[in-house]
Length: 455
Image (cartoon, rainbow, N blue to C red; front, side, top):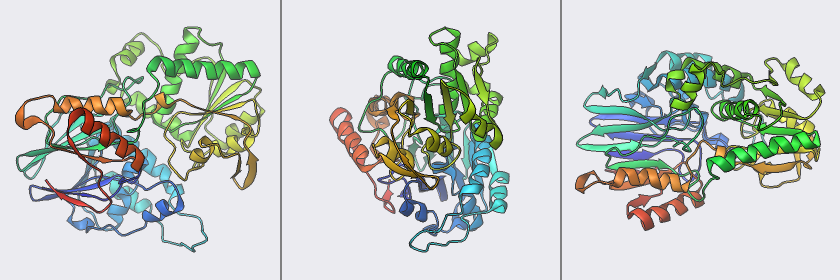
């Protein structure tokens, strides 16, 4: 059994691993590199393997940094199947379709003018070659057995267990931030020999769930008091739905006065429709609320803006108001127009609820840069910048340790032999590696891109 790391090494994006086991070659994820221009250019590099030699692709979840190069894989000759859970299959078709308008880069000073990363015909091949599976439904590829377990990250997200040659290796994908609204908790306590584990927040801990809700409530009350704007760059999936769920609860329980909330993301609106299709994947609390007749994504004051004209009308709406718009790292989408309009106003609160990758506009704003260009115009940042890390869909350091510990708490051979830390900036991975050594005494490795290990 051989494992090669082809992305998300010393970085948070570009997840891509090659597992050679039982005479098969399996790719786990094949995502876009995101962030600065150098990361973007990496997407156009040739694969270091022959795509025709790959037997199957296994997908942990539908975020673009995990699926964004799958159509390129088909473009370059891959002829096999892509497997994920059913919700991920639907979300992937939606998000990859949306990605079409972003995959042709603008000119840069290095005169980088590649061909399109992939085209619609490649996307169609990927969608046609995609097959959905249920959680806990074993599937066989030759002598290799694969099982999808719930990662608690976003709807349909998976931990992928692969068994071959008498060994078990598990790929965490992105692990959820238990407890979160809607999505069930991470599955724990199963037997595995090796773990490939994310480390996005490996160097810090989030606020607890009560603090998280109170911080959101305070932000809303503060803009109500100042008659200002709460501006939230949110990912189309999970963060938007969680915020709507939380605000719905606050309005219904009279914790806050009703306020206009604009969801200005066509992609988020479509993703919410897919959420409603898969209510059976929700946690018990959300399912009970639905059974009681509550529309968990709707409340007085909610305004859904689908068209560009409806989006432009938001600027004319009086405050106070909340604007939730994509993209989550301010690297495209309608959020840019609102940032240009409102970040110069000291009554605006810019609220980050997700990880901001180095090199993105969101990271620059979060890090305190005061003079930026947004949509070609100079903007002096006078808005108040806040962050609620507790709304992140990623587990923090303590949760990562608890999850790994649950896989290690048994006798003899079922203990974890090695853990490989990926999907994190180097400082985060190093901090988590030290914590793993100190608390669990498991060998942890932070692989470099291109490195191969024999298991």
